Image 1 (cartoon, rainbow, N blue to C red):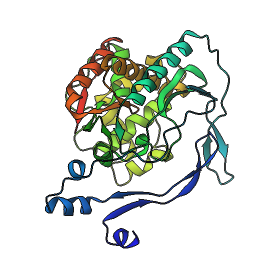
Image 2 (image 1 turned 90 degrees about the vertical axis):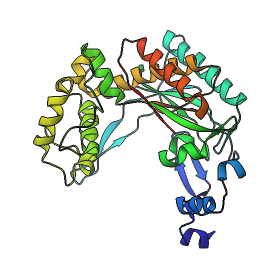
Image 3 (image 1 turned 30 degrees about the vertical axis):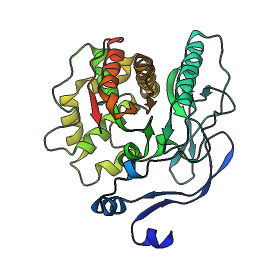
Length: 329
């Protein structure tokens, strides 16, 4: 194994202890073929997916002790003593299980986990989903996979489609393009600009995307790059130049929290909640087919990609949002 790794034919994620909030857990080492090994196999006429179909490995995902719904306190900042601070995840808090939204979440998770349990999913641990909220049931509410050895949500995108097999078929990813930004346009009642929303002449796409995400996370226009976005800004035009160009193309970023109707601190989490609602609706529209959720996308059997796209567009229509859906794979 060490030789294959040294030769660049094998990738390895080393074993470690980690804690996702459900208790300290040991993670076994994980191995997967590198692109060089796949190319070498292909040169000898070997199709890894056809000739050596992926197998499920590792224990199935486990729901957190709190069950299918977890509500956490809002993350807080803790000073490190060196002028910097770090976000600290809040503890789980109680919620009203008879709240209509809680009932909706619980019933949805029961349907989704039942479909997944009956499907033939290979290459990753069998998922078990739950919904995580922040502070209240109507903030965040994204769908997460439980604690497991091989969580498909944590696999890098470039590997995920090759490794996740559903009912014997390779998969495709169908995602909402620039979902938060698109939802802001829907809230403003204006049409989306034409083309890729992250493409602006003379600006790197990654830099534009970082500015959009950071601005929405801030809930109001930025005055400088936040620390978490500085990597995308390195070597790029000055912040004022980037801000002027992006705000000129997307004026909705002048007041994102106002459009969403929340305090700036909760702007991103409110948009996550809307986005998560679209995915839940799309997953139900896609039934009885099996769709594995990501934050703004679905993983489905490749042959059902167009059907999944139609389900996502149908879900967006429920909130009168103009959303663009792309298929990868």
